[in-house]
Length: 354
Image (tube, rainbow, N blue to C red):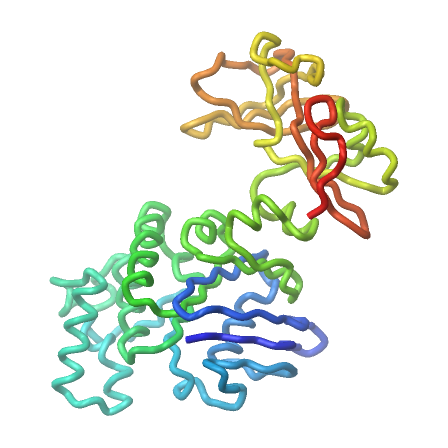
């Protein structure tokens, strides 16, 4: 199903939950709605589902305006954060519930339920009740029930929020594989960046009811279009006076400009580890955080605290060590513009606007 949203607005009392949101989604895409809590993600999802009315704007499915259609006529499946399973029904009964409401023939219901039990990996659990299942199994039942009526659009509201970390990781891969096999257009809400980056074809960043940016995970991470997106995605540090860092002195020509520096933009180590030593300056190691495959290192340099990654294969650093620091690039922004600037002692000094 192709989805198009134009000028979507929603208020709850005096609170503007969604503000002039516009986007389109191609058939078969898996889209992640990502942003801070209270940003408007779930409100957008519920308006698509028909569970909330639209104050202003238009929602189109395959070119047909659906604003006034009830949920059961929109061709959607909805997976809730808390599963919303019927406690007194077995797995097969939960999956079949929507089909019975739609008065499918009993033989066709049995065939569809058996197909979904196998698809969702629930074989052997057909006769169990929700309290006899793990969190991951209950979520699979919820997926199967949403898919039972063969919807054209699948909507998921933080589908993995109530599941422990290990099972959540497994379900992410399972969901991605299932969506690919079914080819069903899907939109899921999450506040987990790793989840969105790993699973989604494209991400929509929602903040204060507005769509900040829509794009592939790679594009959003490497080319943020707003200061909010730059600061929200990944780990980073905001620097008030980027001109104090070696190689960025020319940034002082832009007043009231701040800089966001990601860990991968920063390189630290002993003098012998650098080929462009003249572009570095001395810093002092603060805290070190072991991340399993690498260290996350905090370093004080030119009056600012930066963070960077360091390979386990390199010489181990300790708090208080003096090290050379090379900042390769920074994301600069002010009230009017934003751009990437390279360290002018090792790269082209002119900013690259994005």
